[in-house]
Amino acid sequence: MGFPDGAFVQAVNLTAPDGSHRKVAGMPKSAATAWRVIGPSAGGRGHPEKWRYFDHLGDEFLDIQFRVRENADYDPRTRAWFLESQASGKTVVSKVYVFSSLKKPGVTVSEQVHNLPDISVGVDLSLSDLAGRTAALRPGKGGVVAVIDGNGDVVAHPEPKKTVKLTANKDAIELVAATNIDDPLVRTAIRDSNASQQSHRSFNLSGKDYISYFRPAAKGSIVNWNIVSVAVMAGWITRPVVRLRRMADQITHLNFSEVEDFKTPFEEINRLQISMGHMKGALDTFLRFVPRDVVRELVQAGQAATIGGTKREVTLLFTDVEGFTTMTERMTPEEIMSQASEYFENLSFGIQSNRGTIDKFIGDAIMAIRNAPTEDAMHADNACRGALAAYHISEDLNGEFAAKSQSIMRTRFSLHTGDVLVGNVGARDRMQYTCLGSSVNLAARIEGLN
Image 1: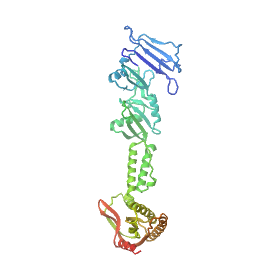
Image 2 (image 1 turned 135 degrees about the vertical axis):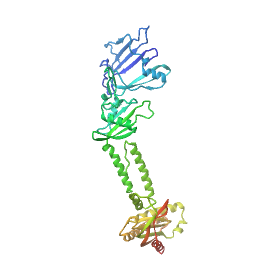
Image 3 (image 1 turned 30 degrees about the vertical axis):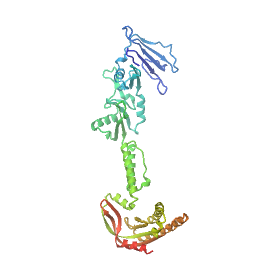
Image 4 (image 1 turned 90 degrees about the horizontal axis):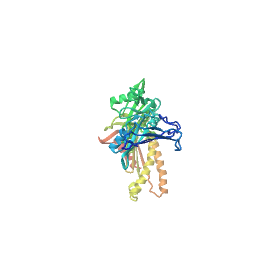
């Protein structure tokens, strides 16, 4: 704490967070805390200074002689932490410097005392703990994390001794610039970053591929520090990319049940995964309206859908509910929607289980085709099996409807094999996959004969 008359009070904690003794120059090994008091100038004779020492219980060591000087060489009014807090009236964080007592880098945080603005209080914070954090955050074997201040000096590194050096005159200790640190990974990452002005980039060093990433230490912070991470371009990096590729392959094959989300420290990959998740949801919704096989062919071909078709022999299936119009006159719209949806859900399962493709729902009717869009050499046989399966499902379903006092939905079926034109019809911005021809008309008329 600094006063306007030059007085100064300092408390020194000599116990590290792990309980060990901090090695501070001039301090007795048995002391847990020390107090330094510098008085105001006394009649022009300078500022008297006194040190006092205490154990971990707070008891003063009376057997240790006070360190007393008549004229202290320390004046808080000439120090940056005092001057800057007085000038700004706000909390101030000093530039990183090397503490003369600890021989380690740190900062001083200072501000004016509330209601006593002529007095400033400061706290010295060692960056030793930050060095430990960089070691804990090492991105895999062979990687490194370092913290760089606004001047380009290294303030934290897994090996703290690499962050400080003797001055040119060898009479003091100063921070090491990131471009000169005894760590080729950090040096190369800083050099390439300065050249490219990119937040992340890859580089090769001694035959190994690395990726570096820069970001501010904290948004809105009053300190201008940056974190640099360098990692070997190995599994830690490639695994998320491989999983992203596998996710894309699964979506391409419309295999949504096996698509799993994952977490990665790379924001770009996380955003790409979110985008692919949205694409998966949109594609899944699209499949509710378009036959799955049609979508699969379009995705795997990598081509946009166009109007047109090809002539092919197919087997067509039409179903219809007998007396559906009369039945719905006795039901509410909600009841119609609920029972019809249950009916279509069950019959569709029987039709599709035998390689059938639902072309469309037409009111209470279903139109399905086989041998398109995917080829099926046994399309006629499979169509018969599908019709029988759908018939038995319909009979079982009617039993359930009757048990719930709901209307019976008797299904009529028709099958016909013939040549049709199968493909996309409609407008360029709104088309439908279906088949056209006299065989389609004949299949629909046969159903009406039942």
